[in-house]
Amino acid sequence: MSAPVDSRTVYRLRPGWRLQWEEAQGRHVLLYPEGMVQLNDSAGAILSLLDGERDVSALIDELTRRYPEAPSGELAQDVRDFLADASQQGWIHHD
Image 1 (spheres, one colour):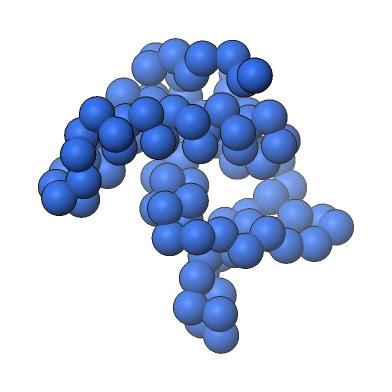
Image 2 (cartoon, one colour; image 1 turned 120 degrees about the horizontal axis):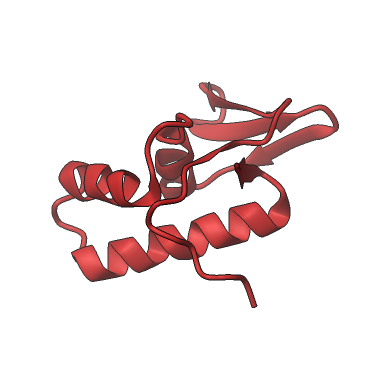
């Protein structure tokens, strides 16, 4: 099981990895030296906000603003779950 995600943590993409919109596939992809990860819409929306300045709380606030129809408690938990998984996968890191 993953460690809980602290609301004050600031995540960024792993060095050498890049988020890119892939027009041909109509989705975001995560590029890394050995290949590529195709992302669903939610993952692309979350990773696109990882700027090395926003903490998890600010990230959730921005996603709640962008997607007001999403139940806020569920959205917050989904974001935390995704960040924990992405961190465990090595896609993102924090200081």
